[in-house]
Length: 97
Image 1 (cartoon, rainbow, N blue to C red):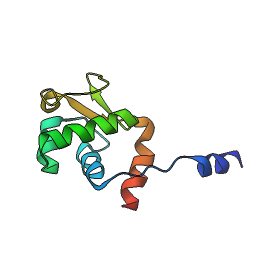
Image 2 (tube, rainbow, N blue to C red; image 1 turned 135 degrees about the vertical axis):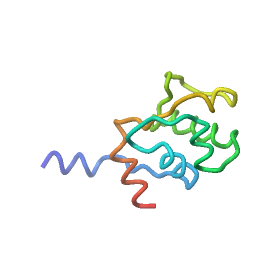
Image 3 (cartoon, rainbow, N blue to C red; image 1 turned 30 degrees about the horizontal axis):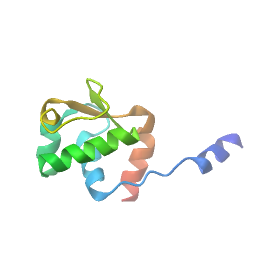
Image 4 (spheres, rainbow, N blue to C red; image 1 turned 90 degrees about the horizontal axis):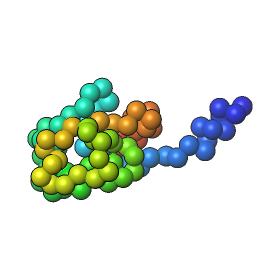
């Protein structure tokens, strides 16, 4: 019974279309460099940097090496991965879209 209550109270993640594209690009298995993400989503580097920073601020994505925020110059050579703590919720958010 407690598990059912917990599932009811979990927050539902809602992503914009651009955020969905970036999360899909990163995937759930391996990390991906910012330059590879940009190639995959076909967006301007400043847009990709803004989206990655918002996903990192929410805790959904982590940078390698860890950083609170990335700048435009560092984005292409920084690796990113989905935070494993949110992987199930992010997968559900992508399926709903």
